[in-house]
Image (cartoon, rainbow, N blue to C red):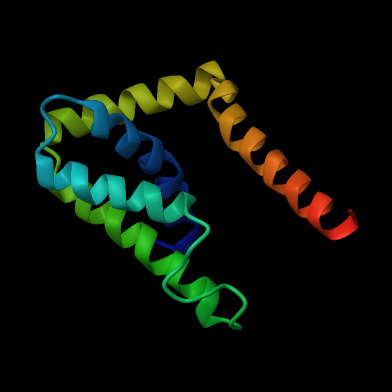
Length: 119
């Protein structure tokens, strides 16, 4: 599997992992790995800061896929297939409004930075 195929697979697996977090049949250990993957992906704090050339972005490219892969291995196959199917259906239905809270938080943070710098 080449890099482009892996990136496409990860793009569909991440929403499925988020859905698996809520599924009642997902084991606790899988939920912990999935939660860590989601939190690390959304967190502004990294193990290696992004301003360090090359290695700063490398931790994001390694940790999130590794945590997602660990989560997927721990999720029972029938639960995983159900979550992947639901994630694909969500993507096709255009549930863009899930991004609204993230966008609002970023806009608020940008507003605060601008206010601190210019006022």
